[in-house]
Length: 377
Image (cartoon, rainbow, N blue to C red; front, side, top):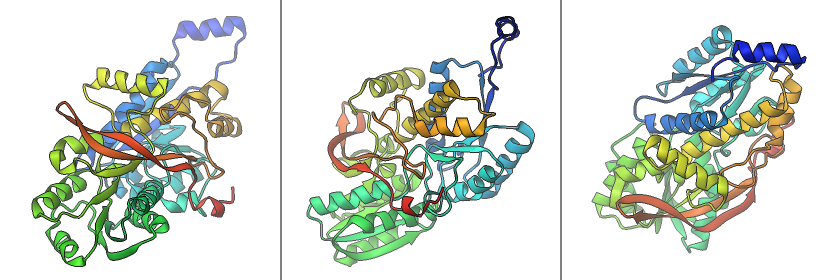
């Protein structure tokens, strides 16, 4: 992460080698408040990959957006105008991404998303400098809808926070779920009291509940739902059953099925090494968010090997090629720079004293998002 040494520069001058420009990355992510665990995991996964690569020519500036769009915009402006970053990354929340990404890419900066994947940026609002390394927001929810069909569920009550990712979530579930809906609710972003929603679920006549409530929202809902005595089966995306959340929820999450494009038991050498080295570095198992940060850094590093960031066309082509070893195994971008990938069904289990997930099925194979047809890059 430090600049090239004077000795290295002198050696390159003597041999006639051409030095590629250093790459400066601005990471804006959530490091405080209710969503801090998600941003911390993205940061730690990203920085683990940077450390392992040992690149002298990669500098990372990290700032806390506090989950506030106005602060994220201010930080992005500072990083672009004052820090002179080449690449931006790190945003967790889709409302923050919508506030930052279009302006950043319009100024010629590359944005690599390790998490947020709002539908406008996958479709009509796509941009050649925007790459999503995680998923498009709907994807994990689409796989959950497909799983609900396979599980024989016929009548779901669905809920999510009222912000872009919440709306994409329920849109994705409904796109694949073939049953009826007994209720559809949008809660306040950051809400922690779900007594009213659970009362509506109890009275709804549904045979199942599908919910997307990431971070502390999911912890609160799961605990209150378990205490309520409502015994309808829960289905959700990985964001509500991820590694950090599970330890806080405990037995209330046991056996719940959830969908993810990653898990620690995906059988490839890169993933096995990532799980081991992340645990050794940070003293905890990696989460979905950590895996996405790790892959995002390795994508960036793979482009740096092939092209100079000062040559935007060449660097963009190197990013699109995605020639890196992903923790997910095979990795490829679709035409709108979003992944085409398998999405798995996981079950919450307990290994010793640790709550975690295991893959039990593939929910959707080689799956692309529904908005790519509207992208006209």
